[in-house]
Amino acid sequence: MTIEENAEVLLARQSIVNRQGICVGHELLFRGRHLDVAEIDDDFACTLTVVQNMLGMIGVDNVLGEDDGFLNCSSEFLVSDIVDILPAQQMVLEILEDTELDEALAQRCSALRQSGFRIALDDVRELTPEIQAFLSCVDLVKIDWPFVGPQMVAQITAASHAAGVKVLAEKVETREDYERAMDIGCDLFQGFYFTRPQLVRGSAPPVNSVALLGVLDLVLHEANMDDIERALKAAPSLTVQMLRLANNSTRWRTRVSEIATIRQALALVGLKQLARWCCFMLYGSDSENKADPLAQLVMHRADFMERLAQRVAPEDERLQQEAYLSALLSLAHIPQGMDSESFIASVAVNPAIRQAILVRSGWLGSLLQVAECVERGEFPAHEKLHALFPGCDSRLSLDGLYL
Picture 1 (cartoon, helix red, strand yellow):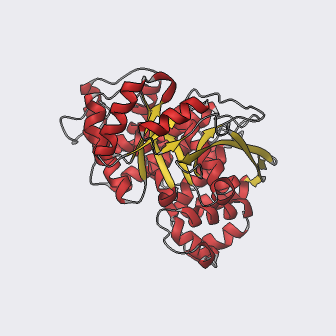
Picture 2 (picture 1 turned 90 degrees about the horizontal axis):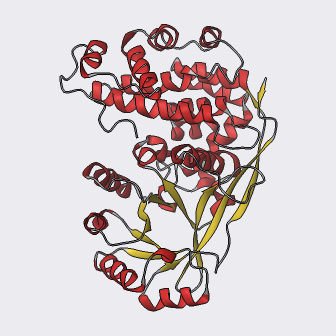
Picture 3 (picture 1 turned 60 degrees about the vertical axis):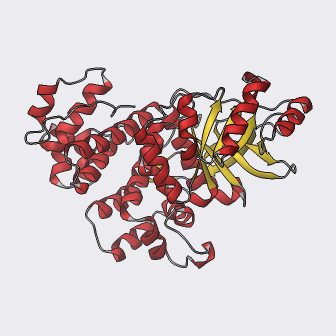
């Protein structure tokens, strides 16, 4: 069985230039197949699709070369550890305009910047007290040019520069706009005046799901590296993606040319990310390369369950990892055309994950039950949560968890 027979994958990029007119970066944009406009109904899923296509299918070198990549990020994406697979030194993470600029986000931005990422505020239209206070947490402010008057542009630019933050004028469409932005002191520019978004195409090779499940099975069992390496050789498409992940991981600090073996790439990527990537590939994408609704649902479920596990048992990292994996596997039988019991039998997961998926038992099963309730719009009462998780903090709540 194969997943997606040589499906075409797409993303778009729009150039960003400096004051000398030199291209220094590209904003990366979600696109469906044969579309020159975006169809976005889920920010997290669309960002994840862009990341998967850039890293696993097309390759960072083919998309960015030596330039920077600007990526739209929901708060949900920013707090997920999927960010860790990105090449930090080359990425600018854009905080969407509807994101709450709170202390938790400030701390997350600080950690990301320490890892080498740069942070931008996207679509800024006014200098609110919240934005003013948040300038110390970012490296760049993107002004939504058509919607901001000259006086406000000057105020935003002055405040940003005073805080040591660069300013990018986006949606610059005429020479007059460009000249005014230059005069005000903007550092970077983006818009139709320079270039329209350009499609970047790649081809996803067919993936043998049997080989993929074999790799996943070994990873879940924490098998020795020799066995995992042999299994990867039977799944060349996954191996190619893993090599790309290793080349661009934030954990990678030397030259790409120094990666010499599958084992070295595996050590760099790590078993946790390899397991997640296997699960991503199990869901594939639809024929139009859109963010598939099933994939959207399972990504949200996994992120929610991991963060709920952190709240239920903050010291139990293994439970948190198992919660994420349980969520990813909970719907994987659907694209495989199997029932849940047959699928789980084909992937020899540990008993806790098995029982959680099949009969919703144990703490993992309780986490899955809560996730399913929230997906239906039913938020369990305080008493129900404590019945599901006996012995956990009496202040347990879902506040702020489902973004």
